[in-house]
Amino acid sequence: MLVRIDTHFLDAYTTHLMPKSERLAAPARETEVRQRPWLYWGLAAAVLLLGFADLARGGETIAPILLVIGYCVLVPLAILR
Image 1 (cartoon, rainbow, N blue to C red):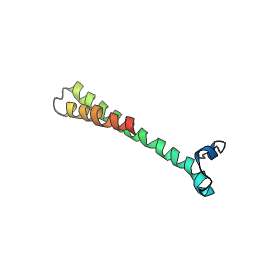
Image 2: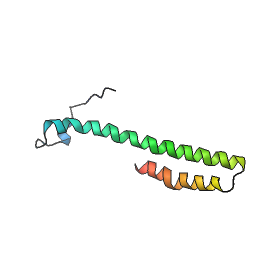
Image 3: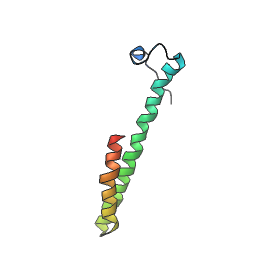
Image 4: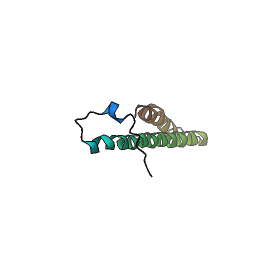
């Protein structure tokens, strides 16, 4: 995947004390950080779907545990990340 670095606003977010290679490498780290929340959202969606599927099947033990983990742990974790 080719990442185009927009250098128009680069000077506003960096200092001239930073080496040029570090100034240009900063936007590349931002794309790596943006990909991580999709993992948390996907995991939350999978756990919630499993919980609702088990609930529809008539589960009384595993379904509530999965739904609580999904709504109280994974969804807030995905929002905060």
